[in-house]
Amino acid sequence: MQDPTHRVDPRKLDIDFQVPYRHRLRFTEDCLGSDWEIVESLMEGSEGVAVRVQCWVDQGVSDADASLIERLEERLGRSDRLQATGRVRLLEGGEEVKNQSRWVDSVFEAIDGEGLDRRSYILVVGGGAVLDAVGYAAAIAHRGIRLVRIPTTTLAQGDSGVGVKNAINAFGKKNWKGTFAVPWGVVNDARLLELLPDRDFRCGFSEAVKVALLKDSDFFQWLHQNARQIADRNALPVREALRRSVTLHLMHITRGGDPFESREARPLDFGHWSAHKLEGLSRYRLRHGEAVAIGVALDTAYSTLAHGLQPGVLDQTLQVLAQLGLPVYDALLEHPHLVDGLEEFRQHLGGRLTLTMLTGVGQPIDVHQVDSQRMKDAIALLATRCREVTC
Image (cartoon, rainbow, N blue to C red; front, side):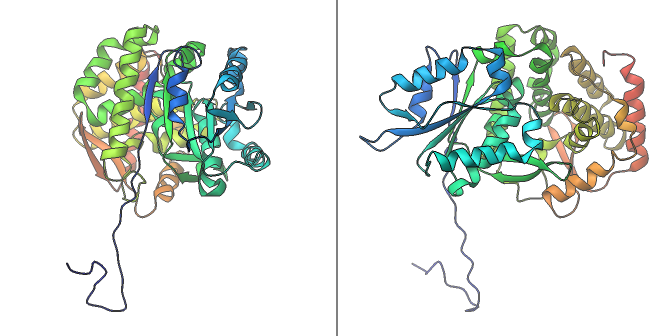
């Protein structure tokens, strides 16, 4: 057998290797009740040694369910296998937790103060921003502590909860400080979604529309047919939409060949170059899911004008977003600094600008230039169409 390190040039040694990962996703009805065993079974340990767990909960989730922390501490206290390292800790929810570094510093201090090591676990219950902040700290401390996420929003359950990215904001830019780290496990729980206000509940489905446009025309048509029922919180279509959305996201991450985004393109960020900028420009008046809805509408309109996407697809996209109760336009699209989002997006990935656009549903393409006039026309088109749908 030839020596795999052998090369013609003795001054050069290049060795390709792969690191095995496992992504664990579970679906539960009541993870802090009858399905607790599913959560507990995710956290493996050495035989005869208690598994040490530190818990963090989104303040907004705790406010919505006053018994949640009590139930979580009771479950941990009664476990024969798990040992809580301390009381359940709270973190500010929403984008604020990513904007203020003191929140992440408090996670670092707790990890150090309670003596967690690389075989300990951090269990975090909350929305996407809290998952991001705690995940960022977990990925850095000791070069990585095992993280189990329990996402409590439709946005996180359908998309970011299974992502391998963790980040906080810095220098006025979205996700400027961040890491790639595969979560040890993710639990999508149906009961926790009942705590969401309607606005936050609907926000998550913009990512479902996005991934359907990119990857699955059948799913896109299904969303178009079921959007009103989803917005009305009908349990069966809600669960179906989230399961199909999160599966498509997870398959892209695990089977797409580029989980850590080392290539030029980030197809799952369709519509996000403007979404991230809109969030900041609005001073986070716009929720992430709302900004994504507008960004998806914009890039679909641009794809129609610049890349031959059929106008009927734009019609359906605007209809499904509106029926989901999501915006398709905001006056900030005409802000002079919106275009700065293109350069910030390029810097975030590196290399030349690469955006994903569409020639058809399930037919994404990579583009490296944006026609500024056609983008202005796309914004104007959305402004006109906004009068025809509920923005």
